[in-house]
Image (cartoon, rainbow, N blue to C red; front, top):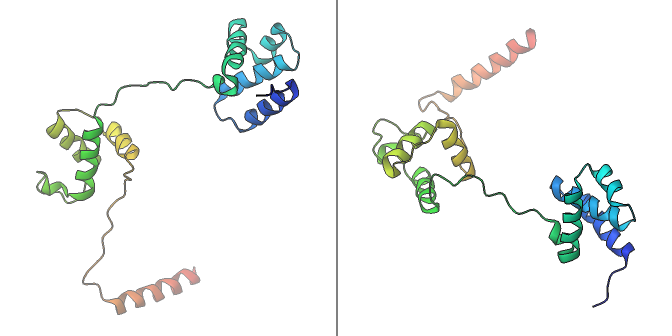
Length: 172
């Protein structure tokens, strides 16, 4: 395989810099590009506001693996309170059953507080209201308020009201 010239490497790095959303990786790309363009380590440190060790780490990572070597490892974050199976059970329950079908007798609509109670009862895991709403959002469930329609409403009276309302709105 043919080695790329310095100019080709710089062009690839510039393209990657323009499309990169991760700020840390973009800074490492800039660091490597500046080095390839002939800047000294102290100049690169000053331009990118990085330490000497960071500049060398970026240089070595690029030398080992190219642009892919400059990617950051995903941050682990906190371990979830529910397992994948428990999350899918919660999702299916909310999606397919009403609260009164799973032991919350008078309720016909799911709320985050009911989901908190259900998770505590089912799995023994306690959530805050905000934590449950975050979980539900992550699972792809959205919060909506129920809307009510009057079954016995007279369509003629509704049409007359709309006409009167439009007329009143125009006179003010």
